[in-house]
Length: 147
Image (cartoon, rainbow, N blue to C red; front, side, top):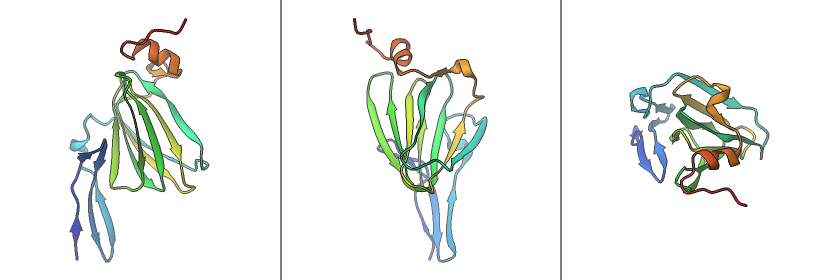
């Protein structure tokens, strides 16, 4: 019996990806033209110890799209509007778009976690905000440095 689910429907900040499930296994389909930016590269993050936090930066112009292929990864975001959100990606039928000027961190919650990342451009050292203070000073609306 074939069962399919909706592709890239936004649900609480998480995009659901088309899956075909049957007795022989599951096929998860990603239509690249539905990713909300042109894709330059992809990479997989794996072998991260449980509880380790990666990311902790923002990109000035780069878009990213994250899909948890295996395990569980919590993604925390801070937007330039000061709004914050957090989502736990638990399977390959969910993905999240991280637009430019969004502070992001990923906490790896299980040993087998593997994260697939699509990016819109080349990673360049001067394209990052590596300090939360610098991100707030340059990007966050209405922020003034504490005296």
